[in-house]
Every structure is written in structure tokens, then in C-alpha cells.
Length: 112
Image (cartoon, rainbow, N blue to C red; front, side, top):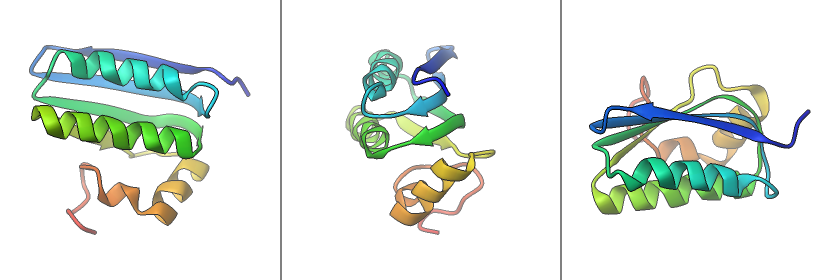
């Protein structure tokens, strides 16, 4: 598997979206950080981050998402994680860390 990630972004200013694909490790989590910072830099009302194409994520990737959430909250942007279709290892990581409770996840009740 490739060590690279692909980040595709788009939106209309009111709402931005970023799709992250591939393996997220300490070696390339900076690429994800850059993509998220670029999308947050426009200060959209909301930012949807689609992680369904992520095959692997380590703690540096999770830390990058927590950092993005902190920045979004500070500037008044809703950060929404799209976890529908999340692959096995990333789903397991979110489940055991309970970080899915920190983020807004469509279709999931807050605090559940």
C-alpha cells in the first residue's frame, strides 16, 4: 500500500469539504494537516471531512483531526466527520479511543 494520502477539497465558501484517502501515518499526517488548514483558512460555516477512503490511521492522524477540531471550534466552523463506510482499522481506532464522540458525525446522536 502507498504511504501517500490524497486530499480532495471543494465547496462554496459557506460549506467546504475535504475527502482524505489512503494511509495516514506520522510520515504523511502533515499533508492532511495542510489540506485541513487550507480548507479552514477560508473560515467556512462548516467543513465536512470524509474519511471513508482512509485505509489506516495512526495516533498522529487522530491528533491532526483533534487539532483541526480545535481550530474549527475557535473560529466558529462546524467540523463534521463523515465516517460512513469507514474501513476496519480506522473504525476500530475511533471506537477504542471514543474520539467519534468528540466530533460531529452525521447519523450519530451526540454523546453516543
